[in-house]
Image (cartoon, rainbow, N blue to C red):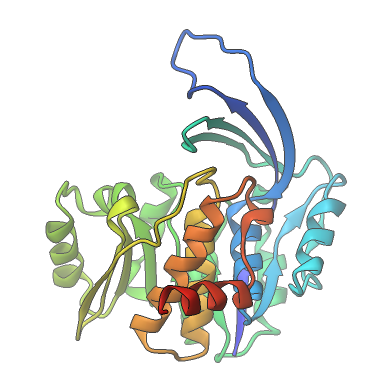
Length: 298
């Protein structure tokens, strides 16, 4: 079973600061580092490093060779990536000394998907493949419709949350992986339990994977609701935590593992990622996650 990620590829410019800049404030950065990133690229790398077969579908600019090289280094299939005129997407990331971050994105090539390009890729995919989507590329509603007609499993991570998401029919989504802010965007509820009940009422077949920051995560489908704690570590950089979790979660789905085992692996992997700097470079390999799990059980 292959995991096909229609996703973004960004070049991340990470500025280390004492604290996140507030409106009207000027702060001198302590350091600048450049990393490959983008939610799509990060999730594809996490999926591959978790041991699954990962294919990345995306658009890069003329400056994007670093992004292809990074994906290939993690054994991600890049044969469907298209190079377009102009700049690749990039992110400006403020990284505070306590590990928190603030990000703004320039879409660049990530918003140059065409329906013809999507159709060409979809024609070569199987019903058994799993589609993964985030909200950093254009035409995600079109991709959802095409994948749904092909009866494929669709995993949606609605980040960043904006009006584009409203064009997607959640009845067509298999797994929705989101955080509390995104859950509130869908439901209007501040309370986690109320958000879960909203999804259960209006989308009874939708499988929900809700991450709760320091409180861990909760998985819900039509038969069960399972809470799982975080893997506690010293926080250095939270940039790739959600993407690492998503990649490992999807890898677990593709291997048809038990949900409790999937949550355990994904939580440990995300915990390892926040203990390191950078986005893609912080994502652990499966053997490292297994070693941490083995050590924690002693």
